[in-house]
Image (cartoon, rainbow, N blue to C red; front, side, top):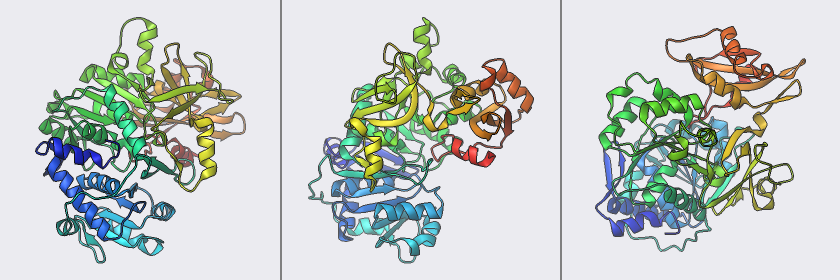
Length: 511
């Protein structure tokens, strides 16, 4: 298998009657999934979709999104997954910038799509599922009327597969050009590092419009099952995990923090879960230790980014969950791992020279999983991929065994009174306080200090602490210049759709 579209085709031949997708009351075998994918490909062909056509999707998690990814892949078309939480102006920009000609929505997003239609420059076909709308073609009716024959389109592993727009945390969203080779390399790299058995199943919790859909990819690549959670609701997620006997769940660290304090978690049988994974941000050590104590030593993580589709490093549970032993081994609990089997990862200085052990530098990545570049932005592409390496903008140290320890993002570093402060270090301390559920540390402009270390925190239900108490708590544990000069209490910390803390938005709200 060298392209995404070959995944359902191949497994439909090998295991036609094996279940591969579950979404609410929809249960599909490989044969059924492949037939639906082929019918969708046929319907899109009838609508004029050809190799290179951009098909934008605006919908919450659903099995149909996976069908669209496979169908466009079989045609050599390009999926453009849209973040349903973007504002109308942002959606207009992304859709127009991508040159999308087809727009697919669901009942949750039809209204916003209708509102922006007059501003969309290239959309000529509109498809909706789960809802009727004037001028919109019905998804299921299209499939019913189309052929289930395999598309006869020659698709190369180096053909563009997805235009995956970043969240726009710095400026306008960027269209990351991901090829079949990129995604398949990631799938192989992750799959080789994890042990799969035929009955394994992932519960897809994070948004499928994000590269965080990788659990579906690697489980499907191995012929295993993917269970789709339509929305993030812990009651529904835990009930589904128990009912479907899933073996894997991937989330971001803040969601594990919520799970630890979810009052009804004990009601559900999660014994089928072989491992939890997390990515998107470092896990505060205090949170990770509590997770291991509650769920067992079944945690693993990866580090990467959209531009690496999204694989960079991996850390197995033998290192992630080691709580006792020699200090040089126990400290790996705070590492994001080592380069994977399919990537090369280095930590370098401003001249791209490897930094000495323990010194801070930028993480750079090389591999067949790294993007082609940014859509319509050759200048930014050349900057990001200079020297053949993806420059991530993430700061880290590396130890003598190649384990990498993320310090922070370059643009998040705070310079206060001439000293460098890395927000994650301060956040780690705040998470140790028994009342703190979420924390974000940013630098605010200050005439006296240049930037002033400022913390925003949200409390666990029924708990609280004063600003002075939290600052004193930090002073007992880290240097004075690193401690927050002020602490702002928030009901909830702003986050991306996959649950990553948005320091940029926190900074904007506090300025």
